[in-house]
Image (tube, rainbow, N blue to C red; front, side, top):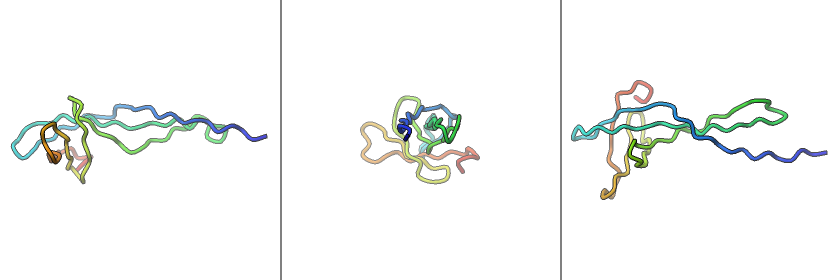
Length: 92
């Protein structure tokens, strides 16, 4: 008898806060989240899986990781994202 496939619902979990700056020295507070998937099935009893991190500013703007220590923040009124940089050792 086949077991029904279990739906995996990701839970967004806060990981850390990153402080980044644009070329003018403006500060951006970026929160990093990871989607945690509970893959608790008969084969993986109690296992979890971490997805790729996602980022948002404290005031809710979307953030894209461009490369080591470099992000793009979507700011209303700006056609292109604002490039910001961090000195956080985990992202440099």
